[in-house]
Image 1 (spheres, rainbow, N blue to C red):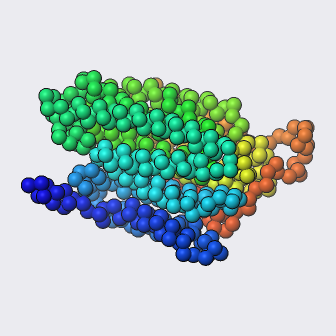
Image 2: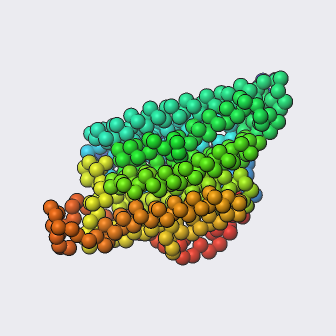
Image 3: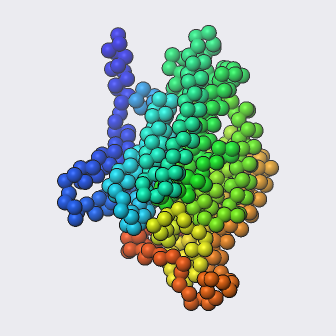
Length: 512
C-alpha cells in the first residue's frame, strides 16, 4: 500500500518543469569545475561563462513564455510546486536580475583582490532559489527555498572580508535574518498544528499544503492560533521586504554590503518577497482578508512616509537607495492591498512596477559600481560633483535611473507608478493613494538633489575649489565596451517602456 502511494508521488515529479532552476544549479556547479581545471590565466573567463549561461537561459525562458497558453498552470511534486503564468514571468525577472548582478560583480571585483568564482556561483544558486520560492505551494518547499537564498545572502553581504563595514553588515543581516526566520517558522508551526487538529472542521493530514490550509482557514477564520500563525508568517516576510516597522536593518546592511549585493537585495529579494506575500494572501490566507486589509493599509502608508522622509538628510548614496527602497516597498504593499480589495489590474500593475523598478535601480547601481572606491561603503553624493562633465554616458544612465525611480515622465518608472496608482484608486483606497502621491512629491527632493549634484551643482568657495574646471573628487572606473552595452540596455529599457509599452501591459494583465 505504501509503495503505491510513493508511486503516485513519483508520477508528479516532472523534473522538466524545473528545467531553468536545474540549469542554473548545473551552471553554478560547472563554475566550480572550471575553477579546478582551468589554468590560472584562463580563469578570468569564468564571469563571462556565468553571464553567457544566464543570457542563454533568459532567451530560452522568454521563448517558452511567449509560446505559453494564457491559462497554463500546473502542480508538480505532490502539489508542492505550483507553476502559473506569474511564475513564468518572474523567471524572466530573476534571470534579468542575476545577469545584471553578475555584470555588477565583474565591475566590483575588478578593483579588489577577492575570490571571483565563488561570487558568481552563489549568485546563480540564489537566483534559482528565488524561482523555487515564488513557485512554492507547500511550506516545506517554501522554507527550504527561503533559507537557501537567505544563507546565500549572509555570505554575499559579508563577501568583502577585508572591509569591516561589510563584515558588520553581514553580522547584522545574520542576526536579524535569523530572528525573522524564527518568527516565520513559529508561525508555520502554529498553522501546521492547529490545521492538523481532527477536532476542528476542515482539518488536514497535510496542513502545510497551501490548498489544504486555505480550506481550513476559510472554516476557522477567527481561531486565535490561525490568526497568530498567519500574522507571524507575514511578519517574517515583512522583515525580508523591509517595511515599517521591520526596516531598521535596511540602511546599515545596504551601505555595508558590496554594491552588487545591495542591488540584488534591493531588487530581487524585494520582488520575491512581494510575490510570496501575494501568493499567501491570495491562497492560504484568503479567508483572513478582512483582518489584513486595514492592517496592511496602515503599514503601507507608514512605510511610504518613512521611506521618503528618512533619505532627506542622507548624504551616503547607498543609504539613500536603501531608504528609497523602503518607500518603493510601501507603494508595492499598497498594490497588494488593492488586490485584496478586488482591483482587477492591481496584480499586473505590481508585476509591471517590479520590472520598471529593476531597470531604474540597476541603472543607478551600475553607475555607483563605477564610482565606488576601495572602501565601497563610503560613497557620498558629493562624489558626483561635476560628474556629467567628465562622464557624460554614466551621467545619462544616472539621470535616467533616478528619474525613473522618482516617477518622472516619460520614463518607465512614471508608467509603473501611474498604473499602480490607478489600481489603488479603483480599489477605493483614496487615503492610501493620497499618501502615495505625497511620497512621490517628497522623493523628488532627494532624487533630484543627487541629479543636481551631477549636472547643476553651484560651486561654493571652499576647500574643493571654485571653478568648473576642477577634477572629480573620486577616480571613476571607465566602462568597458561590454559594461557600456549592459548600461545601454538598461537605459534603453527605461526609455522604451516610458514612451511605448505596446501590447505588453494588455498581455500582462490578461495572463494574470
